[in-house]
Image (cartoon, rainbow, N blue to C red):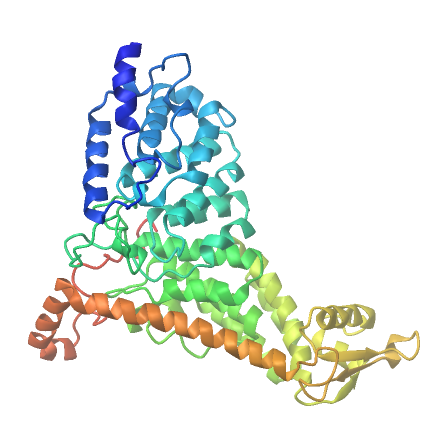
Length: 503
């Protein structure tokens, strides 16, 4: 591009937003009008113009500031990437670092107007990292992309799924927590049902107000996408042993609306759900979460029989005071099945949990117990008292067991496991203040959830689909009572998938 042409283009690219900011900020309507004009101008500008040089050398990326000139910077960066695709895919190149800088500094309000382009840069980062076999390099920028756009992280997007899968493949489990720890409450809204009249740049009650299908900040969400996200998230939590959070994610999969049959993803989630409940609670709940479709629940129990059998032996062994050998035999018999399902690691942790919960169960019956008796009741090797003592010491040090192991001599046969008489005594005694702080924390979490539920109910009651569904439900009340579609599903929701599909 000749200097004269660039001289006419550059002022246009720097025209919005006004900098320095005016004393009186632009109204939402004025902001919306100006940014749409700029977007149209960028769409009409040839890529060759965007990648051209500037007077005195360099290019536009050296002049534009991604924190201020977010739109033109993004368009210019994408034009450079497309112009040199082979070089652009190299991690550590100039464009790679420009992209990293963009994700750390972009203006989240401006990005609401260029969702498709924003996602293209996310995919570029992911593909470049994967092609260079350095997936970990893409985790931080994509995490920033999600949380700068929506600090609450409460609206599910296709980038959430891309990020969870990337973290799982890279074994960067803790790096995923800033996103996974933020609960999902909403999905991208359909622009047809948005009745608020608010502009993308307006202040919204929730992020679903600007993350809509029209904004293209997410690809089209399929039925499988949130299920895979919660399954991947659960697997990440399993890797870092945050069992309760993993159960929460798996139950999001199990309770997904379905008309008649369980998906393959739900079957996979159910098998892990059984094992993790044994690890986290020492038992499998008597029933699935109550919002699980009855037809789905029935199929899951049928297809998860080997896992349920393992859970039954786990429970029976505790109540009958010790047949750890039977549990070991069941694990050995099903070894091929556990490995085929990629659950062998969890099954081995179930064996460890059996010993843990059997020891804890002794507390409800005994105030103290000689170590040889503990070994006999909990260990597959009834003579290895030293190993049992080591395991008990680990439980005490990790806070799993409020007890002491008395060792008056060097002989383990004389050692005694003495349980604390109450939660207020022993090495892990809890004060009233600690109990109160825990209750306050739980109350705050419940209040936050209730707030999201109220907002969701309000939006749902205003949607045309819900009103039409209510009218149709009244007409079909008699038909539904005789066995119709799942009453939790409204027409137009995600289509479910057959278990024999590609899930």
